[in-house]
Image 1 (tube, rainbow, N blue to C red):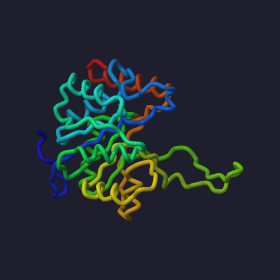
Image 2 (tube, helix red, strand yellow; image 1 turned 120 degrees about the vertical axis):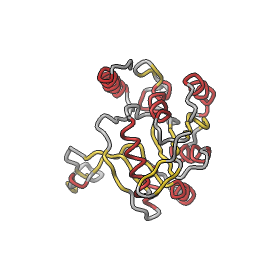
Image 3 (cartoon, rainbow, N blue to C red; image 1 turned 60 degrees about the vertical axis):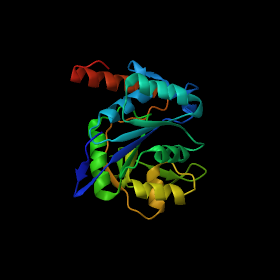
Length: 241
């Protein structure tokens, strides 16, 4: 098992929930969990990186209910010894995370990561663990570059937002496990990420520097971009994609 991770006087076991249970509607049909990307299934990029991360002790892999056996085969074939369970997802993303969280062994810190972000690397996971231990709740994000405007139902601009205070949030999102479990017990409204649930409890969430390369593969065009990013990274490291 990985050694205990220490940051700011705190030490503990770290778990990761890799979420890949979406319906892939915007992908046009195929289950993107196993979509070929740089020569291997899309989800395998995140699982491989987390399995190699020295600070991570245990991983759960959440997939569509129909793909549990396929997910288990993927784990076995790649010998990802840190994967403790392959779980069926729920109706909503937060339901899927809850199932993955319940299947994790006892850990002090939990990192939630979307398998649809295959370009996340070791450095972003390590930053997330450090920030999560320091603040109890931390999310990867990048500053918004575009001008953002709010509009009414008729399409008329009502306000121009100050982009200096705006962040585009990514995963990983890292939380003290007890806090994340409390959020999942108490917050039942639909949310788009785990940070929103923690915010509902009144707990502050800290943003840390994500990466422009940490894109979310949502549409077919995103696949092409991810292919280029992963190929460039492999070339730079001298390894196969």
